[in-house]
Amino acid sequence: MISAKHDHAMPGNALRVSFLMTSVILVIEVVAGLASHSLALLADAGHVVTDVIALGLAWFAVEQSKRPADIRHTYGYVRTGILVALANGVTLIAIAVAITYEAARRLAHPEDINALLVIISACVAISVNTFITIRLRGEGESLNVKAASLHVLGDLAASVGVVIAGVIVITTGWLYADPLISIAIALLVTWSAGRIVLDASNILLEGVPKGLDLVQVEASIRGAAGVVSVHNLHVWSLSSESIALSCHVIMEVVTMAESERTVRAIEQALRRQFGISHTTIQVELGNPATDDGHAAAERNYLHPPLAG
Image (tube, rainbow, N blue to C red; front, side):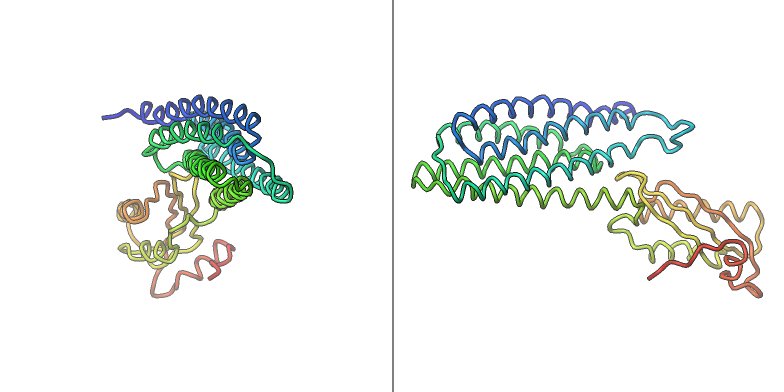
């Protein structure tokens, strides 16, 4: 069996190697982009800058997430990666805007480029990014690692576009290919970054996790033996790998042991059906003959009902 410590170390090791290799790509593309006057290659290098930052911060976030809970952060530091993912997404969008602006300028005033140097540099980037993508694959469902992986995948696609631009310039002399490919890269970056920003924002706003139906969750709880009704139901993500739930359930008058068994059954069902790993369930006793459940909720708690 793989130990928990080793399991946490694997993403960190992969991100460290990816960070170092991507730094090498950055140096190559900046030097080659300046020497060849290629906006597409410099645009890709700008994307690689965010890759270096993304991978470095993702590596940092993995290390921070290992820190245990303390008196100030009772859930630990698992959301460090979400904050990093959000910062990466916003940075990528800013880079995409800068690329688009420069591409528009180049469309108005095309510049000659050293297409052969562009192709060679981009091919090196493709090789390294392919290796990094394979290395990061299978490192779990962490949004932090996904954000870093999207940076790398975006750069891989961008490098392919740079090669295409170089081939077009060599074979046809059509200089507009370079800025046009740059705009395509910017659109790709914006799409990838937008997904990360939305996912990270939903987690930080403690929204219902994507793909989880709250109505089905409530129905599952209501289906447990002895449960009359459910209220104050909240489901949110602690991180991209951990879903939490809290609720109050009104039960028929039962013994303490029966109540405990029902709670355990609900927890197991929620974990099995929805992957909810952290649950806080408060039991309230009521008489179904005289209490409809909602009255008990209003009597003890003033939380409004869920909006449809």
